[in-house]
Every structure is written in C-alpha cells, then in structure tokens.
Image: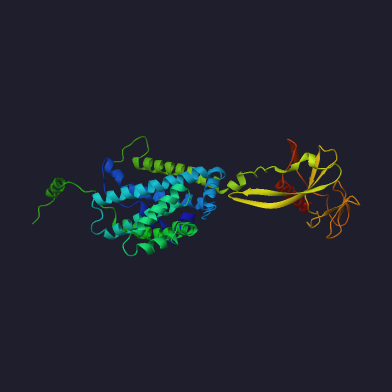
Length: 234
Length: 176
C-alpha cells in the first residue's frame, strides 16, 4: 500500500483537499476575476511574514540597549539577513494593503451579506489584528522613526475619553516610553497577536469554505434577462 | 472548454504553471531562509582586533614585565570589556614574546622570580624558564603566548586568538 493511500484511509485528506481546492467557485470574467485572489494573497503574505519573522526573532533582542544593534547585526553579519529583514519589512506593508483591498472587494461586491456576516466579522477582527502587528512591529527596530511613531501612536490612545490615561500606561507598560514598552510590544507582536490571529483566521477560513464564494454582483437587467429565460412564474 | 492544444489541457497547463511558480517562490524564500538559519556555520570566526599593550621601548631586554590592559570584545550585538594582563619578554628590543598570564596547568596566575630568573606558579609548584619551557611541576605544556606584532613602536597583541588555539590544542589532544 502506498503512503498516500495509507494516509487517505486514516485521515481522509483527499476529501479535505477536494473541499479546499476542488470546490466550485463562481465564474468571474476579466480583471474582476483577479479581485477574488486577494484573500489568497493575504494568506501568502502572512506565511511569508511568519517564516521571516521566526528567522528574525533568532537574532533580535527586545531591549533598548541591544535592539538597534541586533537589527544592525542582522543586516550586516547574518547571511542574507538584509534580504530576510527586507522581506519582513516590505511584506508587512504589502499585507496591510492586501488585507484592506480584500476588505474593499468584499464590501463593494456585497459579499458580506447573508449568510456570510460571521465571515465578515471574523475578517474585520483579522484586519484589526494585522494593523496591530504593523503598529507593534514598527517599534521593534528602536530607531528614531520607530520611537517617535510609537510615542505619537500611544499618545493617540491616550486621548481616549476617561480611560485614556490608563490605556496609555497599559500600552507603554508605564507612564513613559522605555524598556517596558519594547518588551511589551515584542510580546504583543510575537505571542499575543499571533494567537489571536490563528483563532480568527481559523474561523474566517472555515466559514469561507463552508459558505463558498459569493457570486460577483450583476446588473439588474442581466438578472432579469436570465430570469425571463426560465419558466414563467405561476 | 477542453481544447486540444497539443496534448496538454488548459487545466493541466495552469496546474503545472501554478506548481512551478509556487516552487520557485518557495525555493527563493526557503533557500534564503535556510542560508539565514545556518548563518553561524557559513560565517567564519571574526577577525581578532589587535590590542595596544604599550610602547616597544618601555620594556627592558631580558626581564619579563607584566602589563595590564583592557580588552574590548565584540560578540554579535554585545560589547564586553574585561581587564587582562600579560607578561612581555624581549631579548633584543625588537622581537617580543607576550605570555598569557596563566599557568598551563590549571590556570593560576604565575609570577616572576627575579632571583632564580624563573616563572613560578604558587598553586602547584609549576616552574617555567624565561622562554616559557616547563622546568618543574605539573604543567603539561610550555607557557601560552599571544600573537604579537610591533607597529609604529607600539606592541600589539591578539588576545582571543589564544583561547581558540588553546581549545584546538585541547581538542586534538583529547582525540589523540
């Protein structure tokens, strides 16, 4: 018995494979069909971020006296370190853009409507999580741009009515920016947010497969023409 | 839909194209990532810096002199400073030998006995000649010395190269 056959009997992977990759999807023509690839693009970029992020974490130190030096070490001493860091850096920008384009596609095609509201809600959580990744990751190089961006970013949180003062201290790990902010943001970036992301992504992807992809919207006259070709209503 | 285009269907063609492009992307990212991961193996040991331990003219010929210096060491993103010392010997004022200040037996600091003209280790009675040869006691090998060069009248030594060399000597001994 071959290995795939052995596994098939015990896991039913072929059914899972078919459900994921051989499912029926709506027909879309021209450039609009490309809009349906944005979700896959997000997953691709996400995997890229995970792989490069794991590698970067091997040399990065979330401490004010070493953070910048360790990033410089990655750039100048690790084999292909600049390339891997570049992928993570640009991948982060691309991921935020791709997730937002995906959101726009779903919004303007009305794909969030019944019965896919839960998919949409999980997707909005994912969007917020990705933005959280971008915000916390931005601080980690601990250069001037990173530092002051986070000063401003946390100050914005501090403007929240009533709770602002407390939010600011919770985000920074204290009243001022410093070592506690850096370790906190690092923990958010590599532990907390990935855990939330996996949970929200599991729900999101399951629902995408469960409901199938929604059809692209069509003009009313096209729909009416299609209706009149069918049997007349009683 | 399934037009005959020379024995390969549109579906097969697209499937293979996706697989090929996917494999290419995986190879680039995976290859780069693997290189990054095994970077410690690919990167050789860094060049040791030369440490200035004093002017060549300040050491009288024939008599070992102990010098103290600060050794700045940079390992990845951490720079450490440690105090170090060495015994410097010159016979002619031109060629210098710089001894590691530790006995080759168990690493105790030894001292110079100006009466007997020998190095003596107080721990277990190791005795070395002025050229570092073992004269008495348990030391297994002559005194270790640092790589040294003279430039512009200053004596420069490489401190961490010795440790690596000593470790290698130990390894080859263990294998023998």
